Image (cartoon, rainbow, N blue to C red):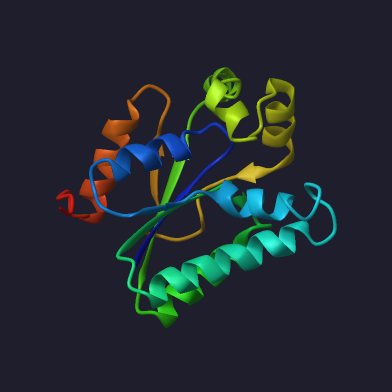
Length: 181
């Protein structure tokens, strides 16, 4: 299995690029909010037990996908250095165990562009961060950086269409652009 790990700050375009990419190549989307939404059914956001369930769910999902031969999983993640390094290392361990490949991509844009995007209606629908002041607070409080791996591809989503960014990722990693029948 190949795990395409799209990461960056909130409103960097991770889900938009993931969807564009999956219009070109066959694969499955495991948006980071899938695990968060599940955890919210049992816990308030950030309550004790919340993040443990999110992490456990992500690991189990990726392990199951690899175990059952899913060829490509595209996942999104708001990676914060150094807090999220243990989760990333667990993803690497899962991929190693299944002879898979982890393909990290850091997506970024300016604070101004992220602030503009954060109010998009699709973010409200998905229960994502929608407040510009909350976004600025997050950007100031945390280091949204590329994962510390030499092979991490960094792409600016500021002005390029998501489809162009998706094609850059496909070309960089040599992903097959042929859709399955």
